[in-house]
Image 1: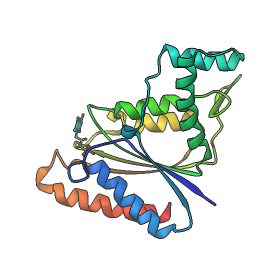
Image 2: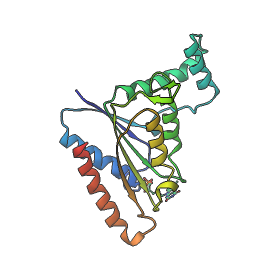
Image 3: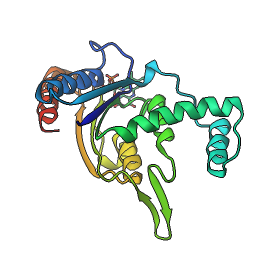
Amino acid sequence: MTTTLFIQASNRPAEHAVSVHLYEAFLSSYKESHPQETIVEVNLFHEPLPYLGTTMITGNYKIAQGMTLTPEEEAEQQIVRKYLDQFLAADKIVIAFPLWNLTVPAVLHSYLDYLHQPRKTFKYTAEGLVGLLQGKKVALLSARGGIYAEHDELAVSFVKKHLQVFGITDITTIVIEGHNQYPNRRETIIAEGLRNTALAAKMF
Ligand SMILES: Cc1cc2nc3c(=O)[nH]c(=O)nc-3n(C[C@H](O)[C@H](O)[C@H](O)COP(=O)(O)O)c2cc1C
């Protein structure tokens, strides 16, 4: 049985948020075309996601050393483990996120922080980091109001960089962009992007 994890990094209402539209269009097409699959949905805004800081970093260190954690460290590690285990258990992962203030929403940054676990998602070797999740397939769904050159874009490229560390190379990317920059073409840009999304979901 294939498990697909759907991660949504927006809590805006769908009628205002293009990235939420993207998420919903992909999900509904995917459910229709993959009726046998197990789907797990997570909205990162509905979850308590502590920032990576000294409690989490010390907790990570103590676990690696076999040391006893304080109750605060243990509480944060339980959250980290929950999301890490969920990610590791998924065969396919869909991540939908907006471009906000040049990058991803902070909750997605925190989520990605949880996944950086040596021996789970990557390992250190003499040749550098080696990702351990080569078999996973990921779809990135993102919306951005302006049009960005690839080297200037810090949301999709940011998430891809993390996935690369984990060894994930099978990545489908769907972007709706420019609907704020070109308001007279807004409806067309969004409609075409949603059509592409529904098609991509069928093939995913
Ligand atoms: C808080 C906020 C920050 C934004 N920052 C940017 C930005 O830096 N560059 C840009 O092109 N569009 C920006 N936008 C527009 C969004 O990229 C656009 O609305 C897109 O559809 C994704 O966000 P949405 O899913 O909330 O609609 C911003 C929108 C919001 C609400």
